[in-house]
Length: 459
Image (cartoon, rainbow, N blue to C red):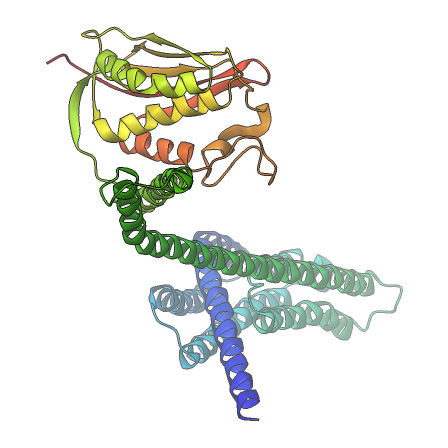
């Protein structure tokens, strides 16, 4: 019972918080729209009052203009308070709504009274085009822009509708006209227009409510995605750090055993220990990659920049990579001349990038295939390219290959093993240097990966 009560209370708190957020957003939208349409309202009121003064009475027009100016001033203060408020509670919502209701009633009554007064000064034969146009325009204006709150819109439209109906009804009452008279036709036309206004208001209100709900749903899902991403990042970081120490100890112990430092290794155990040592090195490499990835995502990837000879740098990597290429039965070609191009980079990190590109090229090449690594000038940049004659990448892959843990063949029976972190890490390292990494590929023909870094002057 106690758990049920706690759950009910928690659900109630969530509901209240949701209502508070919705009302806050509605109030802000209402205030922003009111501020944005200030100029339009002033132009409309000024034009209407000027015409009323020119054709009827300047003194009466001035009085109504003063009333409208006071209403606009009050609304402007309400809008400013809503927009500037930083924290909202239920009491703040209620206070703001009372002020919104007050401003709505004052402005709607003033506009309606002004239009009705002008209509009473006219004859019934005039059709009251000007005052009716003012009221209908004000009603349409409200339906389009005051749809944040049903009650606010209802109050404003109700006041306008009373004034709109009153004008033709007063003509019918004053003239005692028969049903065949055009005075009645004016009344029926007004009723038809009112139906249109109500339908217009309903559509705008439903559209706004749906848009607001969709926006809040998207924001909630965005927050959930951010929370899940943060949890994943923290989990990977914690696990990586926790694995690092024991893996280092295991690796060191296995290397000592295999080196015979602890005595001769029995022949039956030698192969198993070598496999264990090899897999431990792979696991350590994975942990290091995860830690590097987390550092890059957190913007904490530290670089030790130094000026390097691009040609010599690539030649040294190719020499170290040659045994691996031979193990894959791949021919490695190097097009890199020393003392021609220079660039600044973190040698260790950029070595990791180029080695990864070469490893992928060799891994996805057929026996006897050719892998070419080159360095050449590309405008004001140094371009390092790795070309293979391997399987190629599907045209619809895009930048997916640079995503974390992404592999084009993710099935459990895939032929090429790997974590899917290499290219993601390479991309982050290159971008940390202010460079770009990209590729061109054709399935069955091969791929070309290129890294472009800013050129540096020769030392």
